[in-house]
Image (cartoon, rainbow, N blue to C red):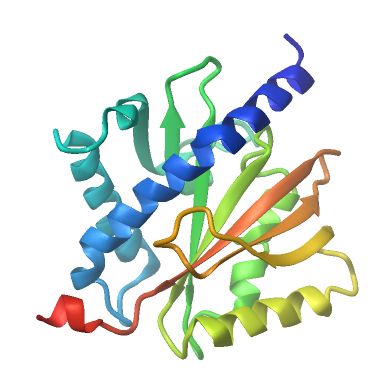
Length: 223
């Protein structure tokens, strides 16, 4: 089977159920960890809280049986690139599916969004979206996701910031083919958009953008 055939098969798998299930695991992790998350947490802290709760869900006998085919990796090192040991780049959250081989992975790269501390430029820059479009991350997969941990203002503010960066990408550093489109993969994650990008490797990637409120606690969590 050629790499092109693998990509086509994986695209069908993502469209049929993998995207939905990976998003559901993220949603459960965020929902269960929400009481621990606040506007002062570092990115790694929030990701760790969410990962812990995803693991708990995967071990829970009440979780639907279809999730038995999934495994979670946190802070997973990337092979290749001429890097070894601690110098290797690391992925934030990876949902791995054992249903087929080679095993596809759904990659979530997370970035804080906090005015004065973590800007939209960090989210779109070489440690954010550009990791996907320059082929460093998810190079063989048809899609991946960015998570924005909203720690100041609100999701509307950061969506406008993201759209502004897309609109002013005059040097084409983001290789945008299609700009942001509102999507609903699962109802719980209601602040989500998707964009399409060329990659320097020659193929295309869909990037899903998920904004998670990490600065306000709802009435549900306070009571």
